[in-house]
Image (tube, rainbow, N blue to C red; front, side):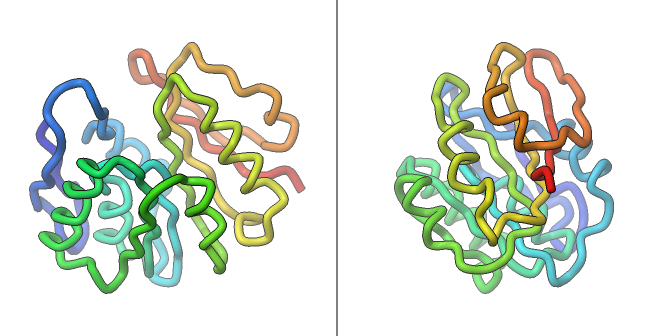
Length: 182
């Protein structure tokens, strides 16, 4: 799958990604739609790209002006692509790569996060596990959670703690925006 930075400081830079079905980086058309919904990124905003794969989403945030992105990934092949992409786009100074299990990685974050992009493997309980940690955590109180999810996945047991801000269907997947209920 051909990946690229859509706009901003590194517009047009090609990004490397795995071939085949093992990973599914967010497609450019969906990425563009997400950022059209978000609008402009402030230069002081901090992002968490959880289950970052190639770093595609986090790099787009940086290209659009984010101050810093935490990239969390456990797969060594994806980490290799991500590191190459961060170096290629010259965002090393604004990137924090968290390697290994996402639960351990979440505990390393000690600053307020403005955006969380959450796209774990579809056939896992990682949605629930990630939200269990982030809900009621002071560093995520004001975060906008952007969730890429298969249409057949239901994590309704945590809906009562989240407000759905926006959702849109793209084929078999949904992009959903949530904020924590106050």
